[in-house]
Length: 168
Image (tube, rainbow, N blue to C red; front, side, top):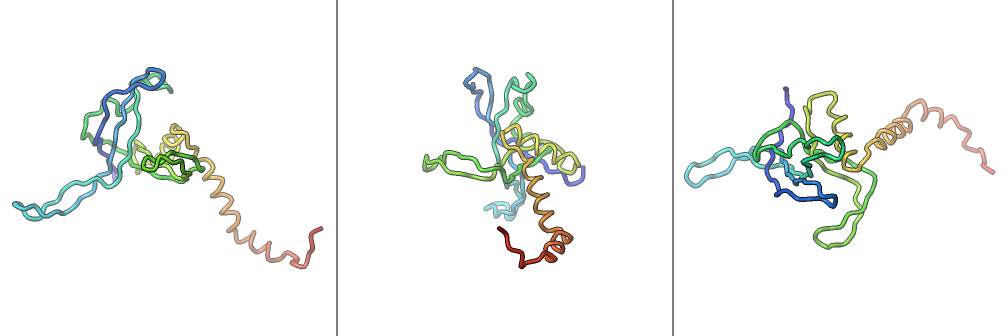
């Protein structure tokens, strides 16, 4: 493991039940950073502090495979390999918890488990977002379109067009 991120389980709700009667918990993970703080008796000390955090629901029995979701019985303050990832997604509507008004957002943040140094981590990101209802495949299409529009051959070909041509 080179520089793979570790995230820490920092909170968990009591067991809840969804509308189908399945047990789940909401657990919160955080990336951990280092801060130097002034302690009255000890002077300057280095402490761990959360940098990013995100919560996910984990099921006692998953709808996908009937097995327990990872993290359901993970002890509080445990560290696991992974990261908290934010990506652009197709726009969707949420209810603002402060104003109780609906608003449109175009990004989503979730916990992704796995070795962040692994070449397959991006696949884990796609799977995590897909399991939350956000398909990241459209980003590949957008990147390909952007690459095509920036293609020097395409630009050169476009500059050779007869600009005096009139469309009917």
